[in-house]
Length: 562
Image: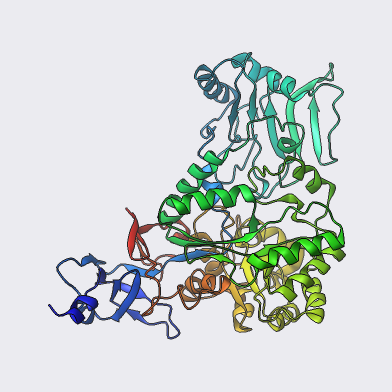
């Protein structure tokens, strides 16, 4: 065989498929060839079989749909594996069920050591608590004491955005309350926290209620509970990547930013071998104070590695900075546990007072550092910055997009902003309430995908890890169906399945400045692909969120196979 033929021989080919390239012409072909992690030919089975040699791996797709690997535009991927590190209370339907699980955990735990569990309820949303329990109430410290008199026990609250309803609830037994120094005289550290009391004695019942979405009790009153270690985060991240691969995700973007402890886990996993999920991370700063000059001085220094495409390669990259204007007492309380960030994975002291946030963002624009945020009146703030230092070509980000009218969409387009969706909340979970609040006409402003795409705005679909499959947001924007609803929310804002797939892949590549590297199946691009069990383009619409990958390929290597 000539040297030229050796160079042309593929490492891997897929034939007999329905391959949605998502290229500018939305071509659908049957075969694709890969060499050295890049796509070398896209076309018919006959054309691609010419690339086969004795060592070529041939995958017969048998008519199944093949798409570019899905790109989660706001993933919080690291959380998924962490959920499995703590014992689950899934399946419990009574207080006795909970006590039996905790008793078994205590038997395997040395006296005096902590027993910490996941929340009460069913993942991923933990809905319907305590109603799902026979007693229709939460266990108290006295209940937990019956099975754990010598070990501190803490049932953690949910991360509030898993369910997006309040309150969050956690429970501690007597030993845990003693370890935390909580007595009848203990005052809540914030108005959003209620320390439940026993009737008569006034002693704490062990039940904490939180009327805030980001847990505060375990960062203040119960900060003595064991923290996630670096080893936990590394193991959790590896497991997270397996889960995301199983749903067809091959890349993630962490728009909210990552704190140093999460970045350390990513770096370790990266050094130990190829990442099965390519990861683009924004930086979550921990500002030491809200002094204008100090913030700007630090930013100028950081700009040396956060500007442009930042540091790293196509497998792991850190660039840009996250900020917000929620400079609240609650966030400052959460930040007292720093550098530990709990479920968040980002720093709560990344928030700044609004005027200082604008000054910081202006310096960022001058330094070519991209900014992401979802603060209230963010469009106004970005426009203030743009008048002082242009941001139009820097692809600044609005995260967790919600409700926009056409004037706001034009302003978004004029600034060249990139959007990350939050469809699980705005369409699925809150859709019916928004319909009631806004009326049918106003419902068309909720995640207005049709208007955004028609205006040329780049929108990346995202999971926010609730749940981790990208098939859920794809379904949301295709069907516009809501939880408990019978008609689509703003039906005129529906987009096609191919458009939704593009927002779940091609637009994710645009988000990370990698549109020339991934996001479509074209010659020269990365061989990141998914073969799905069912044809997402033709199956019943309501089956979309339940689909999984049959095979996931990253850089030409099979990283998941069913």
